[in-house]
View 1 (tube, rainbow, N blue to C red):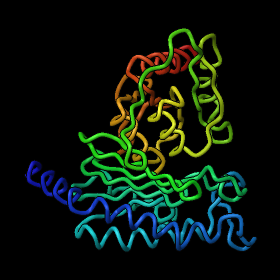
View 2 (tube, one colour):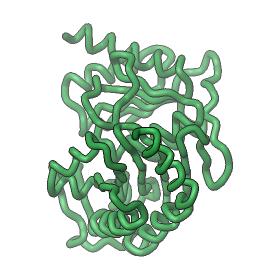
View 3 (tube, rainbow, N blue to C red):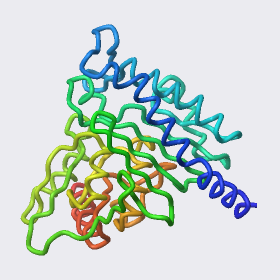
View 4 (tube, rainbow, N blue to C red):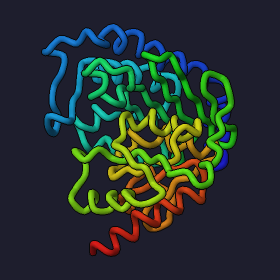
Length: 286
């Protein structure tokens, strides 16, 4: 039964990957780009606090994608950032057997609100905890990255290869912004402030993952596990030859329950190095 369902999803992707890309582009063109650098005050709200913003572009783009993608794949469910904020039980769909669209309509909302082009739309298709395909679209830059499990990663049609960091050079690592970390997580991430590592706060998670897949950034280290922020990028990094690990040495699970912080990196050796630093710091702190 599992093999038959997987074959069905593979066939769906072979037929409709371009349709998903078109849906992502259309949602951005209709709901996101017209508001870029034109947001009115009433179109921006806070969720959990002043650093956790949502805009009309987020809500309307997610609604558009939910309708189109659900119709493209009958029987599929949607886990979208804004829908989960409204009804947290929606997140439970990741634990079931049905195919799930994981959507972050505007990843990097803070950048979007401030008129910075470093934001993107993230869509991933997963089933039973396995991410099967992902689309990362930076509409203000008109860049689209695609990954399909077992078939590679591509940016605007060109293959992506993460490669490996240059020997002897400090590792460039993007980390969770301090506004979104607990004291314990801050202590773990501070372990990256060491010889041979050059950490900095992250921007849009989706675009940081793309930078890893392109070999422009050596690793990321994140302290939260919301699937809409990570599903698309983790598959992109994997298919570009990279790896991801939690502090306990396991791969990150989009279904949750991960040891945090975790890392994704250009190659396995780099992922192990960063994960070891994070885990050692947590063990020492405890």
